[in-house]
Length: 323
Image 1 (cartoon, rainbow, N blue to C red):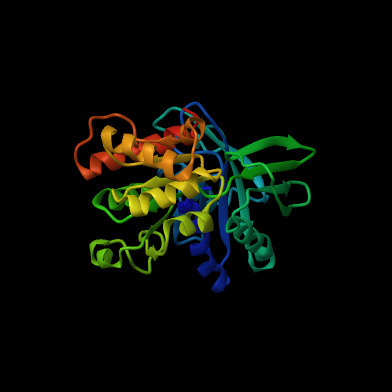
Image 2: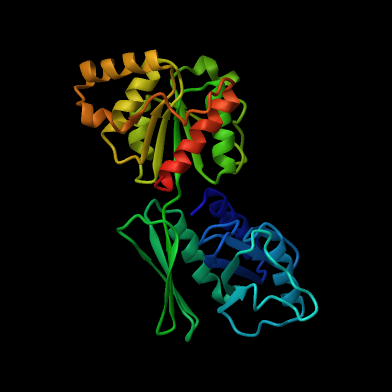
């Protein structure tokens, strides 16, 4: 699940507080090119939109159909590209793909199902949402397997939506690069956490605040303890301090973990020195150090902090997607 979708679930809680009815759409499948992955969410309460499933075109067609009261069964599975095309107006995805959607309708009588969804989504464990289209019953179960969002084909009226835990970036050290990485990471749908021990740098970090969707507050503690606290299988650890006191401690904890990506910023010469230190101090073998990407990022001849951050986020995404 993307961090942006997780934030959207929090926003829906205000609708629940006000006892509002709302519709929830979940992408069950995409065919050809599509702008949003399976599992992406979109919600509508008759006044406000949250989330996205196509970048705009599908949402408009869906809301028009709701306004014409053309849905009378919930939950319902529809296919965008066929079910949502009016005989007078043909709406197409710009990318030429098509999307299958699960449409649910929530009222105060069914809030308990949605509250269970929120509770499971905030756990660090992957989970499965099971919908019985015959009885309209929904239940959730934990999953021992970390998997990318996917949907099993309906079997006997059951739809299984598999959600992975939120992918997070653990940033080690305040720097111009880490600030750009944090911004791009949030835009890419990652949960971002950062730590440092140099509290004199607090004024250099501009992303602190109360808006958790757009801000990243600094955890002031030892990087190894920080990594151990936040680590999940869907975690990338990025050493960006350019200070061995910060980077090396966090990297040693990361090398002992199941992080899917571990990287450290620095030149080839700096990276060689870091590998030597980790061998000497940490006793790591060549095979163990092979998990560390240093220099970090994909080679795009980056020079500025923003360009370096682009190369880092691109490498994390490529690794996550198995490229």
